[in-house]
Amino acid sequence: MKYNIALVPGDGIGPEVAGAAAKVLKIIADKYGHEFVFTEYAAGGNAVDRYGIPLPQETIDGCLAADSVLLGAVGGPKWDGVPGDKRPEKAILGLRKALGLYTNLRPAAIQPALASACVLRPDIAAKGFDLMIVRELTGGIYFGERGRNEAGDAAFDTEAYSVMEVERVARRAFETARKRRGHVTSIDKSNVLETSRLWRETVHRLGETEYPDVRLDDMYVDNAAMQLIRDPSFFDVIVTSNMFGDILSDEASQVTGSIGLLASASLGDTSRGLYEPIHGSAPDIAGKDLANPIATILSAAMMLRYSFDLAEEADCIEKAVAAVLDEGWRTLDIKSPEDETWLTGSQMRDKILERLIND
Picture 1 (tube, one colour):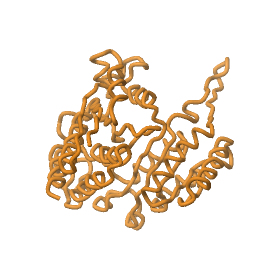
Picture 2 (cartoon, helix red, strand yellow):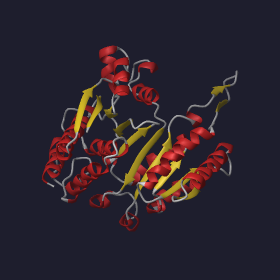
Picture 3 (cartoon, one colour):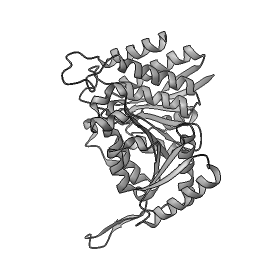
Picture 4 (cartoon, helix red, strand yellow):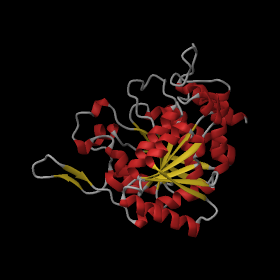
């Protein structure tokens, strides 16, 4: 099977980690009889330098024509002084809009080999956890009406959701749960917010009519923030609004203790998605071969699973990463303070490639 992938390396360490993920996908292609065709496009600060804008039309058209998009990272202090409409980060927002991506999937799991790095109590970390946060991406308070009064001494931001917006993200959560452990927790603040009451009503109606096989429960957002610390193993799939998801997904990423390992996916109505690591462009280590490629490699695995429906191939990548970590190999960002040796980014990439080839 042939798949066309738009490769958007971006800035800083983006080209390094995106290149590593592309090499992993090429091994998977050879191993399973697929063909992945990569076409590279500019976006972010490098596009500002070359074209004067963060997201050229050529990149938009190329991503729309592709089967999916793999992104490295964008931004850096070099472009801090550019006008707001030319900020590198505008490229990500522009791509999400152009591709019609309204749902963000962010997994958070503790790798057994890295349990000691978890910031939670040892007894909690020992239970393990593997959860997926499904966040609504294009609605809510971030996109509602906002402003200030004439005097400028009062301001407002409006939270608004429609049934359609809630249904489509909830449907993604239920479908995701069916591929995992069959449990969805819907997060809201329905004891205070009318939008949350609409959210809860809509999620329950959808669950009862279309997904009776999936266990559904509710949790207020403040309680959810506590439970992610107290017992993250309770959660399988979390579905929530834009703002709540923004906050909880960052909390969940820190609970793992290893931000350099965390992938993400942004999805819409088609199989095409945008896959990227959650870490930034880390310009301070760019070009030094210090960047951990695992988060982007795991993002590529998510692409195989959610856009191409290649679950076996995705499992193969995830198992290879876990095996390399189990063997004790570490990059600088995830090594223990007492470790005197560690792998460069390219060495970690090669360890994973070696595992993929030999297993």
